[in-house]
Length: 479
Image (cartoon, rainbow, N blue to C red):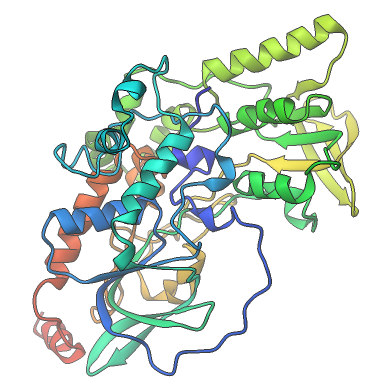
């Protein structure tokens, strides 16, 4: 079974999680006990330690960077999409599009070296599969992250950020939910993208309605032994939606599983090698320099390579499952295209969806035990499905330039454009699909090359003596 890129399954991003923090069922907030004083000043303060910032940490080390770095990770340990490690699922990028190989094929942190050190290289090469199992790639991410424990504070969920002045230098101060405070000369945001929960699901107010990033934890919470669901609705037409439907049929053989999608039906992903060149760095250059109208046209062309579509193997498996159940007169799995929810009503045990057929206007209701939202993630931008900026940086957004349509202006090196030259550098890692194209959609495709670009930009800006506010003011006046 093949799964989508990081972004699509929970993707992305990265990190995803990333948006990935959402993979854990939230608990009560701890008592906030602020640190009396923050710790040392780090050159780089990174938010999140999923694949995006992990690749950056590796690039900094392998490049011999003189910069000091500290990363804050919300989870107890770095994990890659633990909520979607489904049995039999695999990733959909070539295994050498990993944390390092495109940047440094000789790196010790490659996926191939991981397999070698685990004693599984030859066995893996003998697999009758094009892509690695998702569980194995998650193991690779954990293994690589283990080399950088000294740079990461886990269990530190960033919840506030501001610019402060210390000894004449302007710095970012990040406060975590536990009350700890961190200072950095630059900020690199790599928290993964925010899960997209569309109306009317966003007002359901029920633990039984949840995004795919919470899938496995919510099943453990709500559908354990003795509480197996009788009916589940999966919302969406993506690779993830198909995978979830198949996983549910295996876990709960007697359950009714219905996939509801706004499109006519499920669609096969565009895997043409010509289309896949959208995940080349040359396409990133081309996309970045295109007009907004050009970007919109390119997005429409590239959309089926990553979104609202699924691989042929899982589509065949789902179709055959449905056909065989029809043959047996025991229909439990179905796909309902052209259906959109107009209301969601939940109580302690069940959820009722009121849906409309988008072409005929016919209304139907479906009462289920669980609703799983395979509805994707938010890009940055002014659109209804987008968000203006990563939520953590919302208090700072006014300090950075925007495009004519209101979206943040992002440089080629992934830096935001400050309105005041004394504002410390702020970089986005894995959040820039709207400025850099599909290769930045949270997938691994160009991860290592983006880490190289970030390393170069951070080193260029920070490796010299740290400029004070007065120095920068003088430079600005001279200009």
